[in-house]
Amino acid sequence: MVYVFIRNKIISCDSILPIALEINKKTGQSFKFVTWHHPTFLGIQKNTVIYDCINEIGKFSFIGSRKNRLLDKLFKFFFLIECAYNIVFRKAYIFHFDTLNTGPFKVLSSLISDKRLIMAQTDSSGYSRTVLEVTRRTKDVDDSTRDLAAPKKGNLLAFCDNWPWLRDERIENLKAFKVYHPRSRESWNEYIEENYQNYTSGLNLDKNVITIILGFFGHFGRIRTPDSVEECFRETLDLLNELAIENLTILLKPHIITDLEKLKGILAEYPSLSFHITYLHPSMLAKVSDLFLCNCYSTAVYDGYIQDVPVLEFTDYHETALEITNHKSSRSEYVTHFFNKDKVKFKETLLETLRDSKKTKNYLEPYQSDEGFFSIFS
Image (cartoon, rainbow, N blue to C red):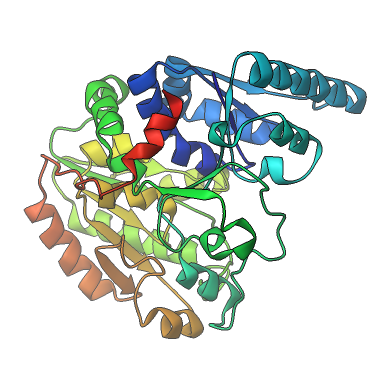
């Protein structure tokens, strides 16, 4: 058995799931994903691809009580006992993202061997110092981990070379494995190929399919004004409406923080466009899309990069962000074309991209990773 203690964001679950799927296929290990955060539990249940995949290789549980603090503590205590039993007598493994570094579950690290304990990086798209700089509006940022509690034992699983934990001298004796771009690996790609038609059978995918990755309709980090994202979204829809592209299906992928009421109100202003709000995994959406659009970079567009789907970011960064990024996207390695309020170029490129779109996707070739990592579980 392998426990996965996910953090209070879906991204940690999303990042480790392809790894878990591959381990299950290679070794038969079953998985138990757990969270103590009920909104995360509901969010993952809503993301049917993630939830179904978890249930294919194990199960997903919410540990705690939302209404009674005493019951919440009791549920967590009994779960702690369960984990301790499975660690000692059934040689269970644990993936975590920092849960065992502090708090009541830290005791589990004293019961488990180094081999069977893994602290993983949260984001499989890798670490970006640029994102931190544009969020804080300065290049003078401290991205060290020295103020965080460090793991005392176990292994590290990194998805890139510049994960800040890899520079922390306190854990230089821990073994670090690097597995790059987990969603480019064969097990995950096979899962997408085998299942995408079942998930997308209700969609009109006959000709042109554009997926718009949504985020927060408000002010944050790199965005110039509180209205910038909404304005860019409206301008994107204005352009699609103007172009009147034949047989166009627009898939809209909301973020957990997207204001759905505002979204539905905006969509009602464009009755001639064919919209479909979907909570499918970006890997499934990339499989059926001609291109991805976003009005501010989101990690969901990363799947476009993985599957060779062009990614267009039409946005409104503030001047400091543009200086930091050299007038590029905050994650330029994953964005094919970047437009900062340049509607003319955006229109030209969108039409060119649709014209040249390939329905047959070329998955990113897996990088040379530490394949020995998977032997830990055999």
